[in-house]
Length: 427
Image (cartoon, rainbow, N blue to C red):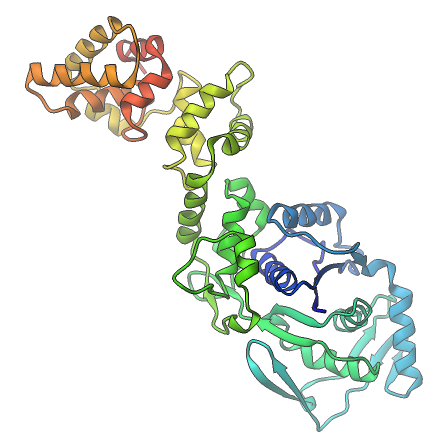
């Protein structure tokens, strides 16, 4: 049975690269009917923080990743690591240096690794210095504790980033010293920023938590991340995790580094938002409004749902909703000053809009069809273009130069609010 693991360190947020590693391990386990395990690498007593751990676990769940069995915590296994190191020491393969226990690396031999993704990798031990197993403070080093725990968890495949390639030969030496069976190793190319360098904070947002706050949907972010290293074929890009589980083949993973493209992610997120049912988006949008400081306690869900229906095909992130649709929830909405100057400071356009407002007052059923009919009549009577009425009206009622269909917006806003805004042009 395939057994893979994800081993986060709770010293910071869940990085996009780490999330991708977790996703590929999870996909492989679920595709093969194996197990996906968690190990919390919290040996750094100073930097490890439970708030980071809680956030990491929550973000894994948010992305759709579940795990088998309870996680193990390295901070609770210091005695185990020391016991294993003492065993190597007793065999004459290590030495003490104060309280530290250090492994003696045999020089002049080659370590061969048949990497699942990169193929054959060879490293000469002349390039590996003696390896600390237990530090002087009693804590284990990463490479040593990793081997002890992978063996304990019976890990069959270690799938991780390319930045661990240099660690693998060192870990193989520990496997040999402890007479343990080697897992198979696969190293994924790192995610690069637009400039070709390793994705980092200098490229902007890099943690899952930040993308969550920006209004990206978990299924969109997960979908995008798994395409950075694997392609499902048949020109398919938008696919659910369940579909990915069925299609995933570890042998199809790419050994080419992938560049992170925020515009591609936004496009994909927009696709997911557009396809979601309005009732699914409603609670997410309400949360966005509350975070933005809107009092929606007396606003009916039906009203918000209508607005979501108008804008879900126009949003790339949920966060954009507030900026796009603020005028539905308050009268002191943001105004595009250039648009105001162009469309509301023109006397002829103002006169057309005044006539439009007067006619709307007599409209009993305030529907988009009725509103549009009146607009067309005015355009025909005055011999003007429809834009001469539509643009100033949009500016007056929304403060924006573009958005959802004007007549649909007017119907949702309601007759009284629309006419008041059209007549009260002081902003």
